[in-house]
Length: 256
Ligand code: NAD
Image 1 (cartoon, protein in one colour):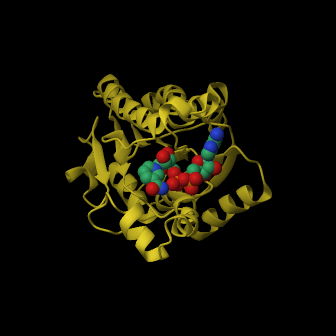
Image 2 (cartoon, rainbow, N blue to C red):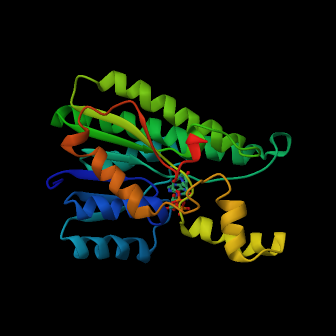
């Protein structure tokens, strides 16, 4: 389905990015995975995905908090038909106590990296006469929660950028959309469960239902495979007229 296409997924040696990279590889795309580290495991992960799905997979190190490295990632990849802007971090604190360096890092990694990568990738998509930009935003790109000022600001920014770039590319067979996941069980979220259980003196099941999935009416996590499947759909011909919009994968969160 996507054979002959090259997909770049930022922040993809773990969690949702890895899930999306695997789904795109399964659909036949050659994939570039990325993070800021440059470990043997990162390159081994690329080889593993390549072997499993019979496509070309490369790991390219680049720090998504730095604009020049974002642009260098796209240049080093040499081709980009599908760009998935996924890299992201979180920090939780009241705004008057929010560390400035955390604010700057979240704005840079969660929002500005999508600007730099998209700007670098569009000329390649235009040359090919086809392209897909999939931004991994969040339910927090459409709604807010207290103490997440930087994250909510960045994710709303990504949704705004999605609409703008969609208008700039509307006549060029390039679509630009955002996926807005609710809670997805990634290593990041899983790691919080035992600590939160201790803090509230609850069982891990209670923490999942009453604390983590409080806002998610389905009371189930979305999976990285479901986010990957949504990304593959957005890359399909069926989605060719879907552009400048958001798809929520949030178990009903934003319907509340
Ligand atoms: P994760 O921590 O498992 O993955 C984050 C990825 O980004 C990792 O591969 C990490 O190495 C990479 N990364 C972090 N800083 C980087 C940097 N400076 N340069 C390059 N790569 C960097 O988290 P996740 O839950 O998979 O999150 C992925 C994306 O999905 C984020 O944008 C996040 O905001 C979004 N999201 C997650 C959830 C959720 O519930 N897990 C919900 C909504 C949106």
